[in-house]
Length: 166
Image 1: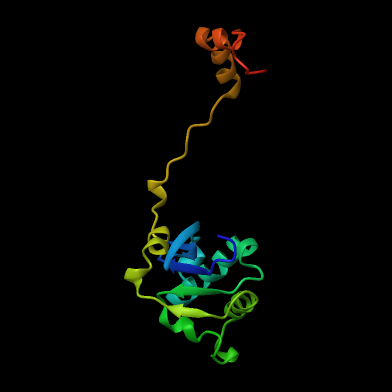
Image 2: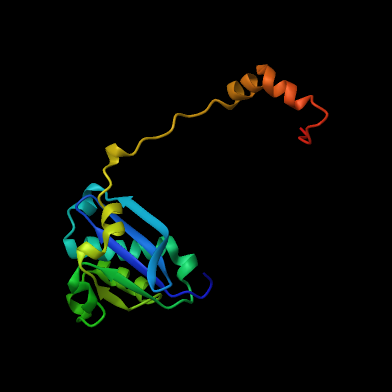
């Protein structure tokens, strides 16, 4: 919906981060885009605060083309992040400062939400890599040859009543 209010819902687990871009429609938040990313070994060692901050940073990077110039709220279950822009910058690491600087270019409106209300982002941050399967790679030459040899397809292609042009 053009002009609809937007919100970004994020979460981080020990192994992945996830986010949902939602729009307000008839008084309810409806997801319109999803984001999930596995953390590398180094990122998995970060503190919960740093992983949650990284989830905001990464989700904004992912959806920036939809967020630029728009007001939106960021929802996280990491309560300490609602004070991120009020804290003394001297207490932040260089990485935290970089992430906060980038985030602040889009929004500083970070709100706390109970984890039980952040279901979609929570699920996206907990996707097991083993549960994701890749489709087998198609051999398009073999696929084209099979279509060429299929009598039903050939009848259809040579039927004058068909408007299909190849």
